[in-house]
Amino acid sequence: QVQLVEYGGGLVQAGGSLRLSCTASGRTFSSYVMGWFRQAPGKDREFVARISRGGGGTDYADSVKGRFTISRDNAKNTVYLQMNSLKPEDTAVYCCAAGRDSPTDFWGQGTRVTVSS
Image (cartoon, rainbow, N blue to C red):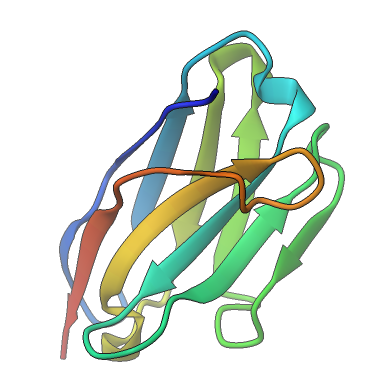
């Protein structure tokens, strides 16, 4: 079992930046593929980014490619999402997730990001 806690959400103006963090419990963090998802008001949850166990492989949704960067520090059991050039349409609750093969087995509670225009 993995418990995930997100940090770093908040209110930011369009064009600004935020960095989200997600810390995992346990000693097997490096064995999990990690990811970030988001859910905007009235919309379904959508994939944002994922990162391989060692951090060498990443994948992004087209809507955030070139603006967001996912990274991880296995020594700190933490995955990050650096979000630059934020847009109002990035407003959502952002959740991190973990899984053995894909980041869908364990979920955090989420952190809210609001981008004002």
